[in-house]
Image (cartoon, rainbow over all chains, first blue to last red; front, side):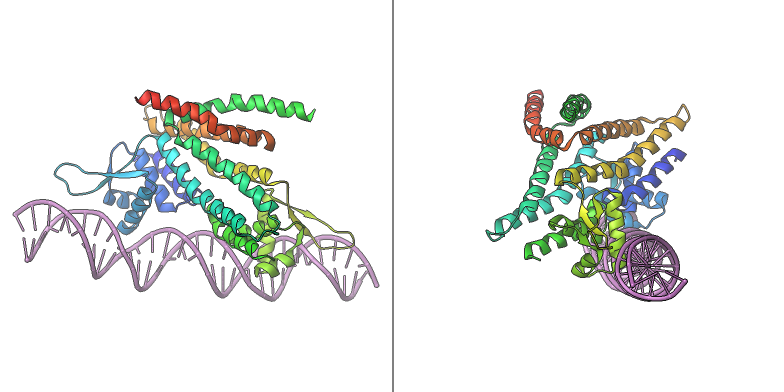
Length: 174
Length: 174
DNA sequence: TATATGTTTCAGAAAATATTGAAACTTTAA
DNA sequence: TTAAAGTTTCAATATTTTCTGAAACATATA
């Protein structure tokens, strides 16, 4: 394994917790990304110097994010693992999962709060929060429902779009 | 304190770690959001039933995210804390911080990898990753540089924009 | 200057999270 | 069947993160 790959694997391990999963999951993801072939659980355990059980749990987690799938080789009973799809589709899945885990629970709590609060309650802050999170949620959701190609288009178009609006902002201030 | 507020505070505590900070920070943020006045550290410690030291650290963290600021009352030496700005501007700050913490370190690692790798190295995956993260980073950065008003406009416009593109995607598949 | 009233820091304790590894489980094939 | 070759689970352990509370620090006022 080349040196730069080790660096990326360590980095993904360290970043793991900021991205919403643990060190092992980050390392396994990086190793699979960098591999141009499917890898067996034992290979991952040996190379990353972690227990076989830990690999099993990391793979399970990555599969729950739909980032990794299992393949088989003819005449071989072992499970081999590989990342599913290209980098853009992986990024889309990560964002989709994060929207689900980070936005949805709060949205449903806030919606319930509004529904169930006694009439005289002053819910102005709750409503403000709810409105802001709803538009964020919808926007992210819409973006992620596009094909990877269209999404790339939108992301690349963003700078010019925002330049126009930034100009408008500048005007309003002057 | 009303009941629904307690629910929101607990929820923010539980979600804290998913949002990139700890339980106490989440709870303090929620309490300050829901308050329509600035609160003293001791009030927060008493109400949330946590130590004074913990409150101090949580406030420090929230200040490092620029989400909270300190105010004073005439004839009173205590520090009072309040959220800074409206909900949209808070959301912008949270996303900005997260872009910094979750995207930038990885981008700079990948950029270095490309720069320092020996010529014959096959960096196709690294380059793919780098390209995807660069456009995401740029798009987020541009969006967040807009005024809260323009950002709201963009977020609300997203659905119609994506509908057009979704139609295009559908065509291409048929 | 001394004291009163406040905030911050940080070492140690507690709690939460991640990891190991052996046992249980599954599947294939002799 | 039963053994072999694999995967998964989960109780025990290790590690990391968070929290406490007393001491150090800061500042205003008598």
